[in-house]
Image (cartoon, rainbow, N blue to C red):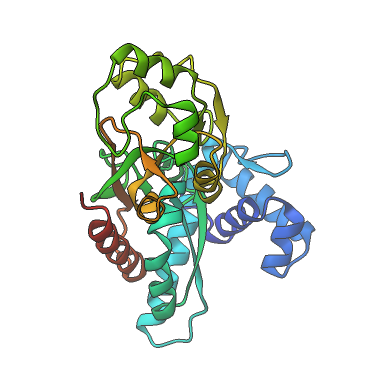
Length: 304
């Protein structure tokens, strides 16, 4: 059964905008026309495609149609550019983890936007979950920790995002007097464990398990230390420098503060998080250009 392209594009617009009214403004039609298109599409495919909440959400049956709509828009843009027509910017939704977004991911996007008629709609989530947005058609490409390609996608390795345990010097002096600083290990194991159990730490959010991994590797019960949560990458680093707690920061983010003496290393093995670029397995001039720029940048800055 062929999918009506107009209805599919309208469905994608509604999900991007979050409401019929907002989608109508972006499509330059009335909300009633938007509703009629969605109703006709649902009748055509014999499925309910929208959960009528605020904002509107896609049902599982809508995911394939949304992906189809985004692929059609991308191919139409490629064709217009190839024919020398004045194509307007196409929107590319991409998913990325917070630490990549705050350290290396924006530079390649800026270079791309200077050369191509494209605007980026960035979706931020933990690297373990960004691939799910490819599966449901929300995004066209994603930085992810998943090495196995999502169905209908291809994958390329980017490199490793390395995290080190750090703290502000005053915090380390007050809370961790028994922890050898500067990246070394040693000292009395029981005293080290007791200090790490008491000292407050900072998690990004409730899904952040890096501290849990680091503590377990040092023989410390991860359930014991008090935990702050700061769910924004820049603010997370700022809170660490300010002395709110100890943290695991990407080396890309902590290096300047370490060199300036605003942070000190707490030792222990670093945690390396391999990252990959996954995108739709669709031959597109624009999408391939985006992949090349992002993969080149990732491999340059994520080498350890």
